Image (cartoon, rainbow, N blue to C red; front, side):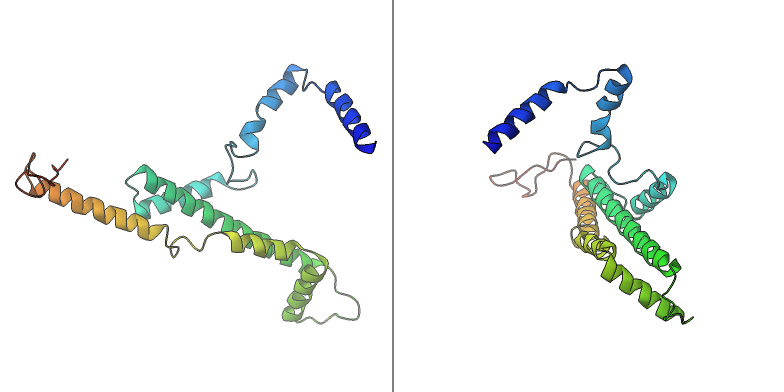
Length: 192
């Protein structure tokens, strides 16, 4: 009986809702897919973060790795996103500890030693809040640092080396020749 009542109530409430009715509400609602979920335009950079710093980081990575294809551009994007998120988590961790250190110590425990204050702040964060453990968990789920993470930089370097090798072979062989040299079975023409 309870589930029938819940179903009836849910149907009645659903029938009342028809979405936004004012032009302003419809306009705001039409932008939801740009702000939330997989189709959001801003999935890496938060509103409080500096677009210029992000663009500089992306430019530095692009200049360093010099991507030569769309796939390499995607790898650069992943590297930058990973690094940006790691920096954000470090900033969060620092702010959490700083804010705990600003809290007053209990009257019984008032040493001026900064190490003690840091340890006490850390203990409060661990004992009374899940924030520091969540930040640590999120950081551990990010890929390793991009420069040492096998799927990223070494793959770009290997692709660039293969492209240079192919370009060198293509320049050395005249157009229309084959890799086997005879044009027979199993040989493939070189393309420029």
